[in-house]
Length: 152
Image (cartoon, rainbow, N blue to C red; front, top):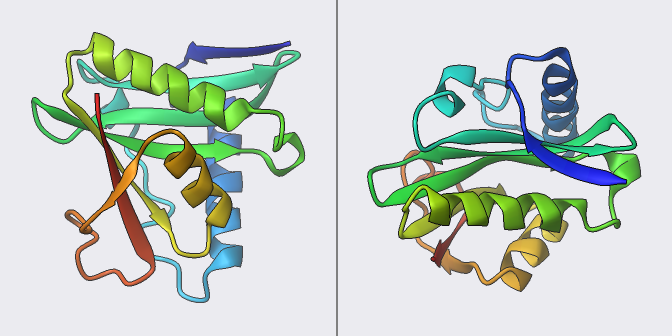
């Protein structure tokens, strides 16, 4: 059974997921961004933000967060599903719940950034109705970044 729920981003399970996320980014990119491992949990403890964890049979297998950009727009951060858990629709479930919450939080748009060496992420976002936009801050000069947006 797969569940998606809001969880504390400072928990040991979340730390393990975020470490796996960082490890994967470092493997995919010759020169990953210096800040790839930096994530401030306080960002998702603020109003109109959230950190979600996907669990399969009680085990933390994926995550995703909403971090406000401004009063109208929110950014999806730290979308990740553990390697052995992919292909089960977990990323879609997380993304759908993040979108539902963004609507509930009264945002007009969702933005996100992914990388050129993450084709499965690019496909997921396209399938979910996101469209490519010019890179937003702080990704404007990052040639390995691809930014997307979806009006909600």
